[in-house]
Length: 489
Image 1 (cartoon, rainbow, N blue to C red):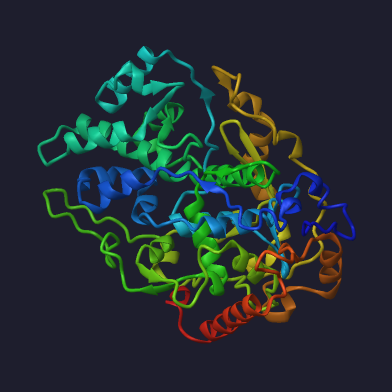
Image 2: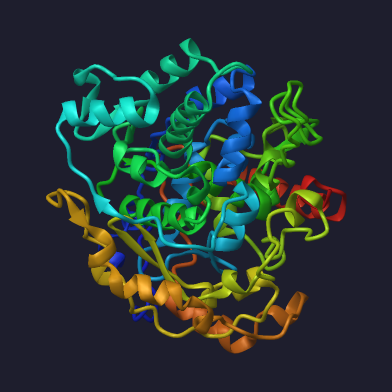
């Protein structure tokens, strides 16, 4: 028996027939998604102090340094699975009991310190033979991988890792060597952290064309590109039958931990790979690297003594029982240095632009009008989310040497003029953030409960033992919000 319940009004969640939540039953209550990631090698390189400050300085100039500084953390695939079960392709939001919420441009900019302005991350999808790619690698990366390691325009991250370990930069390295080495590290960050491939352990060499001119790299809107990539992965993984998920899931996990205290770990001190103060070079290059962005707060030692982890059943039920006030809508302290340092220049307007997010073949609609409480504004009934759905099935398959920039000229033009699509409203707090009409509308169009009510398998959503655990989590959540937490430092 499944937990599938149709919404009273199916006009919004019209894809429920193929949604993963429909299949949750007593037979597969513990089924979880396999998380594919490839960021371990780059994190080990950085934590071992094997990346010279000359390289880190260029990475900072490229706008990718913040991602590296946030480090490597285990991903709780049970938490990710529970979130995917509440992700909706129709709206690009999580449908929680308390309302819609999503990862926004604000989150991406603050958590990883990525640029959200600038031009979209899209160019021609270059196709070359393995030998042609090897020559490109010689020119741009400074070495030629064997042809067997360049397959389908992808290069093994382990090959980049081995090259970087064996050919480290020092004070005597030439400027060309530093640039080529920096491109290797940038590819590892891009393929390992930002756009991990579902095959695992490889990076697409199509990103090389974006790294040709080091000073121009920072002009790309990397933040909107990884948000597009994350949305696409969530959309694909929410369809019945999908068994794996990739993408920048660390950002999703930090987002969830930051906003739902009953699911976040207890953080203890600083992890050694993320210094508390700016790094100052100890060589002849007198450059001060910036502090780490907000996401590095979670690159510390932590425990789950008071929170649930690796139990999709309990996480599901915590989300099912969430009450108003148990979701932290406005989580960031804008006076904190690690937040303030990454949001200068636009005063937050871009965070609230209804616009397409673009990454090569991927175009996903960004709808901040559905989650205005995350910007401290009242949530009203949003406009129907009907734009962009026809692009969900588009992919790079069968599009060799395809000019995505030309193909997506329409969405790109909207992106360029996104400032004309800013959602404006007054700033409010507390009960003023949502009105009665919205709550009534939302209760009719959403699916509030995901946990199955099954018998005979040692668990049901009303079973006393599990209910007691969830109640304890809710009490912990309330107590933690009353005290000083990592989010308020």
